[in-house]
Image (tube, rainbow, N blue to C red):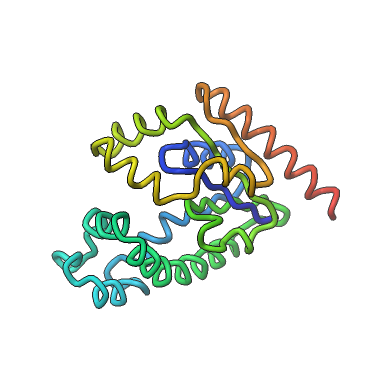
Length: 198
């Protein structure tokens, strides 16, 4: 079974993904694949260099500079997604070839619903956390100001809309143990449903 895991910036989806991996799922992180696609020699690198030559520095894409452009310009963000996402999807399918028979496959996709990636998975999960906690996490992790974090949050699907679209919601409003317990409940539900489908 192929599952999509999403959540707004700072929601804790990466920690949830780690919890799924600990339970035995094959986790495929599309952010990692996107970095691979835009790396020098990567499939998307030359397209980005042609589109935004100013973000190529010392032969590589300056991801921070590119992020500043696309988070402030919806048209640029759409164009970047058009360039990168087909390559990410191809790489993700290649990674799936490494799954064991019957293994749950979890695709971690920040823009699961916005890009149509949800159409490629059997079930979807959203991780939701209070805005105050999301802000604090991202500021501590990335060293950016509140306005920058809020701009990134605004560029993503509203949590309540993601909740409405997702098959499962994981509330990340407690400690790590609370999150892992919530992940385990979803994992067991998914693997039980998969065994019933066989």
